[in-house]
Length: 178
Picture 1 (cartoon, rainbow, N blue to C red):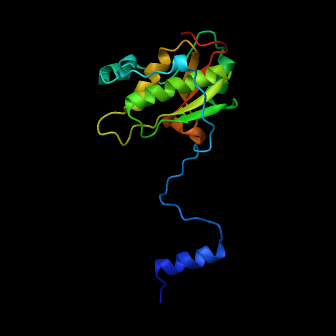
Picture 2 (picture 1 turned 60 degrees about the vertical axis):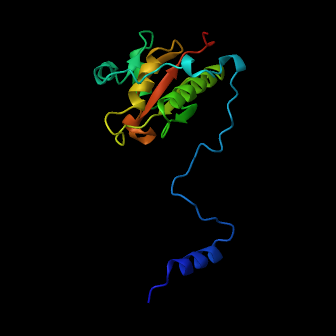
């Protein structure tokens, strides 16, 4: 005769004191990360200051390349970035964000990364398989990255880092241009 679920849980709780049952099956691994300080003058508070990516048509989204490397990056470094062989300084997960919030988070994260002299970061944007039509965040992130002077390169991550649902972003050392 099988025990019901509550008996199994009480048996497990007795064997594992101090272990709490999770309310959901998703774990926020970034919860422990320190809050990144963002200079007050760089914070965007007005929605009108944020770019509107909703006007990007599917044809325009298709024109955005999956990867970009600045002409100053030699082939050996490009290969090391593509293969995920460089140390990753930090990561940003944009799953579940709407476009405006994602742009704001992305902007603050890149400013934080550049001010801390990070070279390689990962942006997790997802593949867009759950979107009703086309991927939303992936082309938006790539378009935004293409407009940033501090971004020297980006390309899809290796499967161990998220595959095509994430991008390696190689940053320029130095100050952020206003």
